Length: 178
Image (cartoon, rainbow, N blue to C red; front, side, top):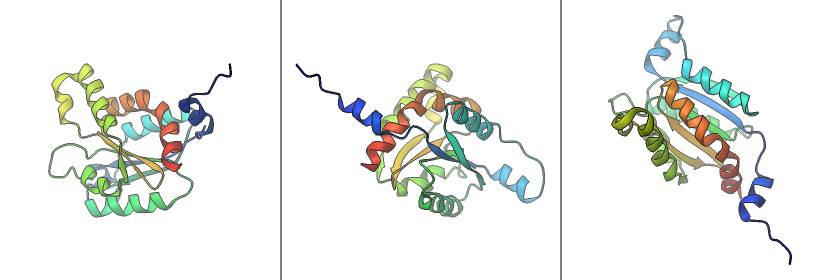
C-alpha cells in the first residue's frame, strides 16, 4: 500500500528555508535620543537579530520608529512593498499606556490574524512572569504574504517569542502565499 505524505510535510517541503526579516523598534525615548544625536542601546532588537541569524535566517532591515501611529503605518507600508522581506517584527509599543499604539497602527493591515499567537505568547509568558502576562497585547497577522508580528519591548519577551514561534513561520508564510 502506498503511503501518502501528510499536508504538513508537503507544505514544509515547499516552505522557504531562509526567511528575510525587518526588525522595527517602536520607542519614543530611543527615537528622541537618535534624533538628538545621543547614544542609545537597543538590547531587544540586538537580541532578535542575533537569534534570527543564529537560526539561519537573515535580518535585512533594522529600523527605529517613534510611538506615533502615522509613522508606524508609513514604515509598515514601505516594508510590505518590499519583495525581499518575509516577516516584519515590531518590538515595543504593545502595552496599555497612551503612547502604546503599535497594535492600533498595525492591525488594519492584517488580512488574516493569527489569533493563536497572542494566546500562546501570553500563556508562555504567564508561566514565566505570572499574571502580569495579561499586560501584553502581542499579536501576529498576515499582510501581503508577510508575517507581521508585534512583540513587547523587553528582551525576555523577544527571546520567548523567537525561541517558541520562529520555527512555525516558514510554514505560515508558505500557506499565506498559496
